[in-house]
Length: 418
Image (cartoon, rainbow, N blue to C red; front, side, top):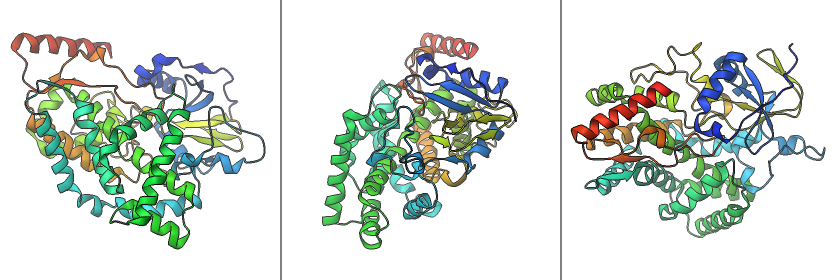
């Protein structure tokens, strides 16, 4: 086994704006790289497809560090144990297995398929509200309200509170914002929601989770609140970025946009290709080692954080031909946008459904859709985990010929640079 690298790569805030280029350099140098994240501690990044896929299912990489190492004095940098952390993504079997079973039925392919009419109705309503406007921020007007409304209805909480959820989600996923500001407010809100559902149960997921907790003693109070918070954040955040970043990818690849418009039957493949290509998550959630672990010939010491960089794996040329080329007809099966192993995303069928409906309806409703700003003026959120735009200004009406030529030149310049 090779000795681990002792020299860390320092990632500065510019990393957030173009992480794929950083990961590409790392892949060329080796499968595992120790880095110091912006504003954080040392982390080992696994960047090649084969090693990422294997690591995602490796039982030697643990999630529940708080319980595994409780009492021995080790606390990973910039991490805190709280009621919002006791959820499935931070647990190992058997606790993970117990909690996952409680929500699995809500996200089966059959049940999700039954949501299509409601997803289509919400989509149509949002597009109606956009109609007649010359320019909108697609995230604010469409990419955010669509999935957050769907997940709120599924859970059974008011979609009218979505601005609160967005603020909390951005805070928890930010690499530069501390969580104390929203932690108390989130706890109070979700505790109140749970209490209301106990008084007046309904046909929704939150009521079902409360019944399971109270009747079967399967969830304690912290687990219930953490589960609720996880479902809300995970249930909309990645889909927001799929819709927004996917639209950007299509608008900056006009031939593929035209191809998809001409053949809507490509939508299912296009959604998976966009998941692979735009990568709503830079990497999977945190894992850690209890003992030295070898990955790809590199030994990661005990008590180290490990990040499986799924976005890098999805652009690994050893797995995907011409991975930096968008191909809406590509068979992107095997991409790791939803993870792999026991933590594979429960919401994958719902995300795919929302993506198909969102892209299909948007492109059909606004044939003149175009970027309202040059691509290089767009900014990405300062988050290690999330790869999402801060905003996406788009024009809904066709450009004049001079404007169209200027826009195409801007796209050409952007593609040449990237």
